[in-house]
Image (tube, rainbow, N blue to C red):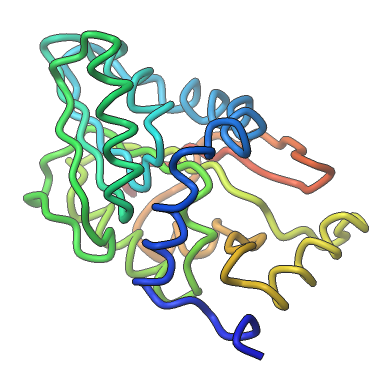
Length: 218
């Protein structure tokens, strides 16, 4: 019965701490093609300040750090301290000195208003319930500069889901502590937070539908 309950924040942090040592072998390789789609849509430029929410072991952090160059800055916030440590190791191995990676809760971003040019999320938004998705996206809108852009990569809820999507959702309902992502519709919460969608690409991962979206502040 305990697994039928949604995990607490502390349980989620503890789970990702335990996964940090094997995450790249277990999940990052399968997520990488979709993440690259999102990074291409975001198209980070030199001298920009870019924030990644839920950066995990830092695969996108490294790519963003090279994209913005020495003149730019890559900021990141991650719930798991052990995931953050892995990301910092990757950034250091790449010789990056333009990263600022923090541990914290993305529902209250520790950044000033209008301080970021762009924001990136990959397989993060679908970890949250509907109310917290809206709260996070409003925080994203707060820290972005006027005309700022956001790229979101996520598992998408479809009107005609595949059998694999149905199985995945069933397992998520039964074991949300371990299968914590769930397919979502990100269009509505993005619009409600003040964004307008500009580009969208579809992908499939393990037979489950996904999308990479680019949006800008309206």
